[in-house]
Amino acid sequence: MNKKLVQIVLFIAGNAIGAGFLGLPVALGGVGFWPATAAVLILYGAMLYTGQIIANFVLATRSFDLPSLFQKILGKSGAMVFCLAYFTLFFCLLVAYWTGLGNLFAFCRECILLVVIFLLIRGFRSIGPFNAVLTGGFIVAFAVLVFLILHIDCGTAMEIGDLTTLNRSLSVILCSYGFHAAIPFVCQQLDFDKSLVRKAIAYGTFFPLFFNVIILFVSFRALSGEELREGLARGLPVFVLLCEKEGIQSCAQWGQIFSFFAIVTSLIGVSLTMGNALQDCFSGKLMRKFHIIITVGLPFIISVYNPSLFIRTLELAGGIFLNIIAGILPLIAKIKGKIAQPLDFLLLAGFLYILITTIL
Image (cartoon, rainbow, N blue to C red; front, top):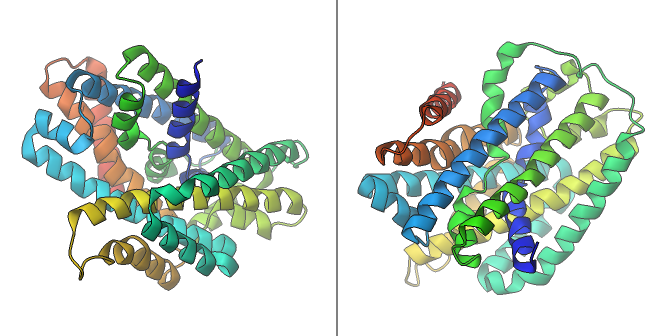
């Protein structure tokens, strides 16, 4: 595997791994470990498939961004739907990140706020060294967490539970596989080499799948189904529940450290991406700081006002907006191009079902 391919694989993994996996055990706590793992695997396959669909369109059209791609295939309405879903997705994710950060690390939330504002003002050129430290901490904390798994006593959530609660959980699973918006950049970096692009997406998406299964395993071994359902009702990340449970403090503490690096890395990446996009849309002295207000100010205020929104915002982000971007639009584009397979219609029905259940 060449150096550039390794870099792109890690880039895709970094885009997909965020706060979504912190909500997975809580959202899936009522169904039990094995049904939860099956659902995670099935939706991983679906999101990997739609990612390859987008990549094929990008490679065929040499598009440099998804709005122009969907405009070519679905017209102006397709581009408008994508842009609306894209910005709303990022806004929901930012609310989720700030809420999760407040639940886990309220003591340092204001410091992170200042760091994000500084990076928004300075732009991407300041993120390199900072991101390297965060990534290193992320890897170390995850390795220690996996080691501590071996010393956790089994809880009761490993058993099969109430499968009727799975509907609400599907949107959170989708939220943990969001890498599709980065596909045009991936194709450009790999010189539109079809073979390398396919390998990068396949290898890069394996990491979030691995993380999701590990987090489920840790949480379901340590917590009972009742404790996880209580966490869902309170709208909290799973490591808040682990910290509240006696006898597993070491695992919970390293889980918190792992969560911190995961959330902050995603928070900075999404803030910079959305902030730069908004800055391109608005100009003039009065609008110069508008992108900071929308990207940082509003999500932060909402998270402070309602600290129990973590799970609900992940549901909205995954079940509606990422669903449209990564599931519904690519499949409609493929079906419109008359190159659809029976699987495409089945998957489209599945994504529409998740959309409807999330809204209802």
